[in-house]
Length: 263
Ligand SMILES: [Ca+2]
Ligand SMILES: [Ca+2]
Image (cartoon, rainbow, N blue to C red; front, side):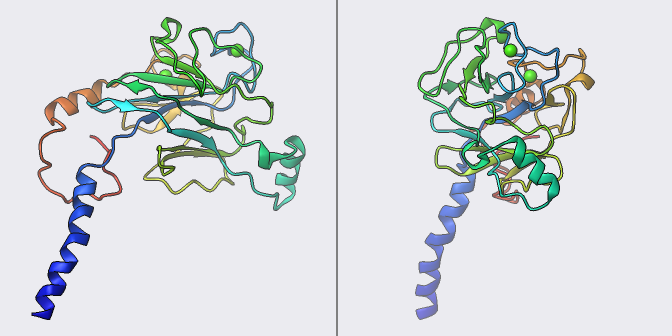
């Protein structure tokens, strides 16, 4: 009797966990990062190259349902005190690193399936209009393949991604990390369900497909340095057509930590 009561009491704690996995929120996907801007590049199209201001991150809604970006945040690594001589040199280059963390929180903007967002660093730069900020979402920008373009409007040249080693994380509106991208040797990736190590490149790095690894952009068809606002979702759109999101999953064997992964 007591054992039965215990079993009944146990059930409510396990059942919602399964439901939670099934109804897991759909998150946007980071598809391109430009963390080391070469001399001849001007991705934000303001007529001048800025080592900091032209840095950008591109994200896409890879799902068959809309996603509201409100409260999603992109930030780079927490800067830790130098522990060896190499890091000391880096600290010299970047005084006051603790205060120089890149962080941008999106305003209210609904991304329809396949729609793209580009977030520029914006230090002493003015991306081609229309361009949104943390306070207001823009309309679609025809100069960037009809993507939604934002500027983080950073005020310091030190609020930048490190060319040698850094980590960028995407957090949901509850502050939970959903994706981490890291490069170089010394950065510890943020614990996130989706992790990608970015290659070194004298161009941006972009996913080879919605589920593919990041590769130097110059190795992709077209041989371009970067493509802010442009990302093809063909493969994943086809797969979501084959498996409607309303259909019950054939089994619950997939791990709860990767609910957004699509083939
Ligand atoms: Ca520029
Ligand atoms: Ca792109």
